[in-house]
Every structure is written in structure tokens, then in C-alpha cells.
Length: 90
Image (cartoon, rainbow, N blue to C red; front, side, top):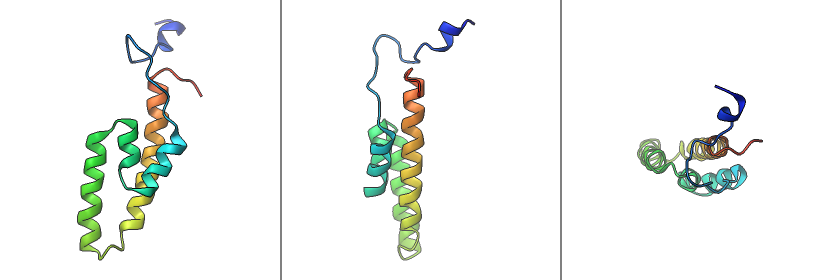
């Protein structure tokens, strides 16, 4: 495998738009799971939303801030990974 093949994007036939990691993190902080939806990880977002609702209800919503942080960090890293897989370097 040569160097050119390593830098080819995973997506074939079109160049997807770059996703902003900062915007993804902000969306994830505002509403749990929305940052993941922005990146296109719909099932992960739905799972996180369900986990947030169930665990927060069981703990009297004491766990909700933890899920906001998890959502923001996960959204940020998902956007960075999306950009890397789409062929955007840096």
C-alpha cells in the first residue's frame, strides 16, 4: 500500500462536508445526543438519550450533568473521527 492510497477518503464518489468538532460539542452540551446526530451517529445518539433519561430518572436527575459531559466529549471526538475518515487532515 503506497502513501496515496492511505490518504484516500473512505467515502467514494463524493466529498462529504467537514463537521465542526466545536459545534458538535456545543450541540451535545445543549441537548444530549444532538451533537452525535449532527455527525450522523443516529443510533449512538438514540442510545445515549435513552440511557440519559432512564439513569437520570433513577437517580433523581443527579446523573444528568454527567451525561451532558459525555455527550459533548463523544460528539467532539466523533466529529474529529468523521473528518479524518472523510480525508480531511488536521
